Amino acid sequence: MDSPVLTQLFRQLFRHPACQSLRRQPPSLSRTQSRSFLTRRTPNKRKSQDDGMLWTKRGDISKDIDKEYWSYPTVTAKELRNRRERPRQVKMLTREFIDDSLYNPHYGYFSKHATIFSPGEPFDFNNIEDGPAFLRQLGQRYIEFEDKLDETTPDIARQLWHTPTELFRPYYGETIARYLVSNYKLTLYPYHDLIIYEMGAGNGTMMLNILDFIRDTDFEVYQRTKFKIIEISPALADLQYKNLLDSVNAAGHRDHVEIINRSIFDWDTYVHSPCFFLALEVFDNFGHDSVRYNCRTEAPQQGGVLIDADGDFHDFYNMQLDPVAARFLRVRQAAARQPFPSPLGPRVLRGLRNARPFSKEFSQPEYIPTRLMQFFDVLNQFFPAHRLVASDFSSLPDAVPGLNAPVVQTRYQRKTVPVTTPFVHQGYFDIFFPTDFNTVEDIYRAVTGKLTKVTSHEDFVHHWAYIEDTETRNGENPLLSWYKNASMLLTV
Ligand SMILES: C[S@@+](CC[C@H](N)C(=O)[O-])C[C@H]1O[C@@H](n2cnc3c(N)ncnc32)[C@H](O)[C@@H]1O
Image (cartoon, rainbow, N blue to C red; front, top):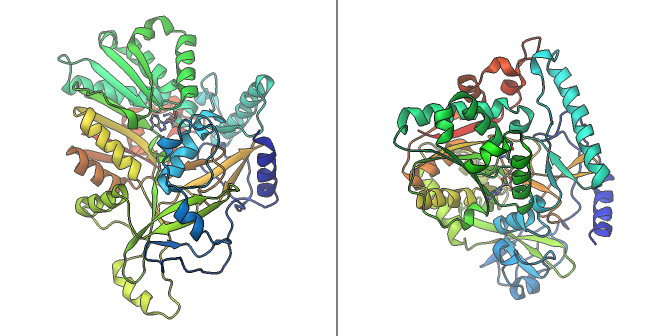
């Protein structure tokens, strides 16, 4: 039922050349620069019905949407959860649109086409010549993995990506396990069990690798280990359970594992026990709000999207911030230990820039991690004795325009296609953000009152991995060199 729309959509995308990409795709697969044709834009600026007092359109839309803006209801991702069809004749805040696009159980990205690559057998790094040879092997395994999937369930829009957990299995899982067990033994053992929560567990590989490691290295701790996954996607929760049952150690691990198919934002159980809370490559898909600033007054406006009767997207800005975005800006202002980046640029240059003729009225959008702040609320409220172990991208190339802006990309016939706006056909695009670890660390501290450490992925791995496991014959080490743009946030 989606396919005529999709075919047309992808045809449009592929008429244009594309750009280099980033995470989750083997670098051997080339791409071309692409432009989105999914939002309509015209250069003319229009005035809104109420003289811009309440909301300001971006000024680059082709259709006057004043009437629709006032008559369409504002909906949230939660309200759309039971809808099987993508919504029309509604408006949504940016974070709600992103959440709906990624997580709607019927058409969301994580429920339908998203597949996390699994290499099957671990890579034998010590017998691979060098980095490029590893890349070639990875490219080959990608093809084999997808060929196998196509035999049973062909999907031209399959969204396939990889994570360090999968590429470096079991070594990355063992690295995290060493960190967990050492910290557990230092501070909690023998008074407490080792309780590990993992939010967003993908294929469940981290869980298996951690449990295997603990069982093999410290059976006494293993007997006291509980591993609980909190997973929003029903499809991935099923896969995690299947992979658990298929694993050679299923019989032993089963009693240690609980898979809870729920969004962390629906969590309602108080966990008083000390626990570790893993969040690996989950923050990046959390919904963000978009905010732009008046260049003269510096007043913020909050972004959203209106979806018209034809399903076309029109982005808009509202001068009134909703309570979540307003709170984020307040908390950030109060918690920041150092100046945080702004799309208005450095404070000292702002006056000069505004004095120039033809200076712009509004800044580029800034994407603020409002859902992440709400996740810290959940930790604070329900997991008061948690210790967070989070890893994510600190920067991403080829993002859409704006500060802290996401990469928005889809995959069609095994090719990655980046686009230039998050407001695209829901469910077919991965929308993922970099994390500004300095700011996020301050917000986490302010919300939870805990002390933290931010470290690069590379330093963390140096400290906790047996790095010889992932060294190629010429001494290169992809586990160290591949994730230069990733960092970790740890509760200390
Ligand atoms: C990019 S994948 C990372 C998977 C895994 N951590 C890894 O590194 O291989 C993101 C995972 O987070 C899950 N997820 C995203 N938002 C979530 C939420 N609000 N609550 C629970 N799980 C969530 C997704 O379904 C998916 O399993």
